[in-house]
Image (tube, rainbow, N blue to C red):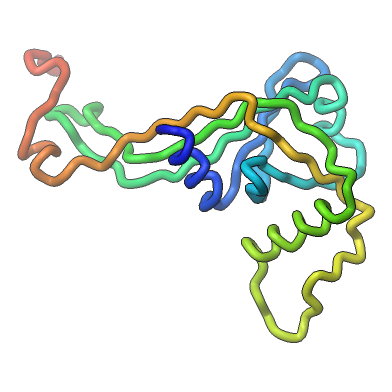
Length: 171
C-alpha cells in the first residue's frame, strides 16, 4: 500500500500492537489503543515500571502494527488453497515520551473522541490522572503496508481454479 493508504488504515484502525525487544533479547508485543496525530502514532500506558517500560528503557526502537482482516476465500481445489482479504500497516521508528502538557491533553481528547462512549453527564476534557500515565509518540521513520483484496466471486474457486499445484494428488 502507498503512504496515504497506510495512514488511512492507521487513522481508522481499532487497536494496534507495539513490538519491542525486551532486556533479555526476546521480542515482546503488546496490544494498545492509539490515535494518529499529525501522522505520528500516540499510545499511552501506566507510568509504573513493568516489562514494557523496562524494554523501552533498553531500546526505544519499536514497530507498531495495525491490521484489518476481511473474509477468507478459496482460490483453488485443495483446502490449503485459501486466502484472507486484509490490510495491514507497520510503522517503524523510535518511541519518544510526550512531555508537552497541551499535546498530552490533546492526546486524551483524541483518544476519548475515538474510543469514548459519549454517555451524557460525564465531564469532557477532564483528566484527573493524567500525571499517572506516560504518553509516547512514534514518528514514522519507515512505513510499510500491504493488502490482499477479496477477489470477486467469478475470480474465486470453483468459478476459477488458481491451484498452484493442479496435478497434485492426495495420498
